[in-house]
Picture 1: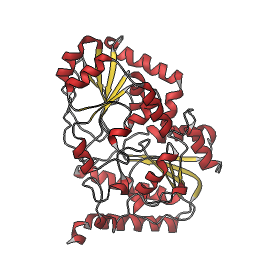
Picture 2: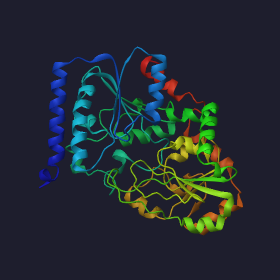
Picture 3: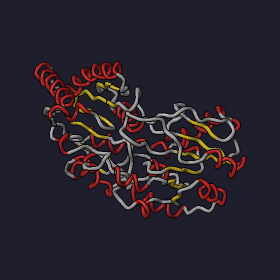
Picture 4: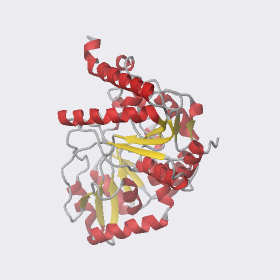
Length: 386
């Protein structure tokens, strides 16, 4: 029965492994080929984009290839994605570096050949909610039976993280040696040190939303629930109508949802603005005066700006049972925790924020705060800097 349960996974692994072995027989590793791959998005963003731009600037003659295909769980989407994976297998077999930023199934279905390194630039900074092998036995995580067929997060050659504090936890999540986890920074955070880019984004934002000039901007960025791509429509635990009534006209709420989350448009053009694809999460963080989240790792990015944040943790006990955290949630988060809309609104209106706590949090989870993470990582990969 267990075999039947995992039959699709076993079959997919067999096909990938067979195609990969065939590619290894027919083609050599191209020492100049660097492939960037993700199924989080149809275009390159975040850590991959920053590393790609740095590599292109420093090493323009390398052979770069991009593989971006957002997963669609419909039947036609699965067929299209399988065809995409066939192409990915070829590049996985022939690239010197194969660079990803999330779960990527083909990587775990093969035995990588000599001459290829698989680089993980995990999309989340710091250490917050558990992921990978740290969630085995939890409802969110994989089962021991599944791992007998596919060892998730295996075969990474190097992983790059924000600080030494994060190293043992990433090693646990990926089942790898700590010596291969390097605390050189998070590439996308370089954006927070580029004043020119931030000024340009601010200008573009207010040209698109001129009615928001002069308002206090609050960003609500909750983490997703459930199993990645298989999402029901999201429902906010915050009562936005009540929040609007209590805060008055001086505030506006921006909503940014995780790429895997689904929701109808929530914009009312008076208080609530559902930002979908016009601005990245990094851009929105630089625009806002205050962050409200629950368990999202954007708190690490936002701490670099040393601005106040609050936590709306209405289901924290359930979340601990489902997934859990690496550190104690109550003592770790650098801002007050709320469970109802009224108390959150009162805190926001009061405007008494502890920025020293934010600074201490930043210094704990970032070994470098200089905007040069991309350069450090590219140097480490291509100049053999140890």
